[in-house]
Amino acid sequence: MRSTDPSVLIMASLAEGPKHGYAITRDVHEIAGVALGPGTLYGAIARLEERGLIEPLQTDDRRRPYRLTGPGAAVLREQLTAQERVAKLGLRRLSAAEVRT
Image (cartoon, rainbow, N blue to C red; front, side, top):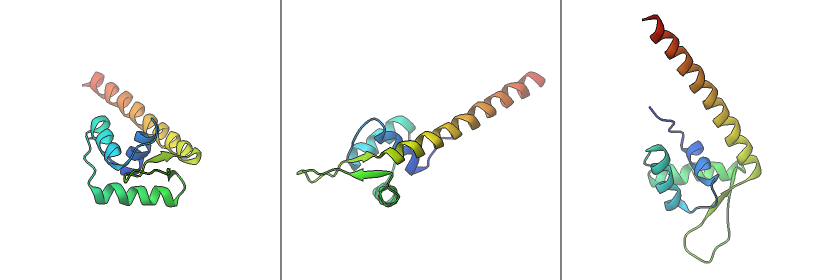
C-alpha cells in the first residue's frame, strides 16, 4: 500500500522545484508508483492553488509550471512528518509482533 493522496504527492513533487502538469505526473509515478489522471491532477492542483499551497508561474509556453509556496512547504512538512511517525510506530509494532510469534 502506498500513500496516494494526490495533494501530498503533487506537493512532494514540487518540493524539488517548479514543474508543469505532465512533469508532475511523471515524477509522481516515478517516486510513488501512482498514476494520476488529468482530472485528479488538475482537480488537486486547483484545490492546492485555492488554498495558497502552490502557485502558477508566468510562462510564454503553453505549459503552465507550478511551484510550492512557503505555506505549502510548511503543510507538506507537517503531513510528511505525521506519515513518518505512523510508519515508524507501525514498523516497531510489527517487529514486536514478529518477535512474539
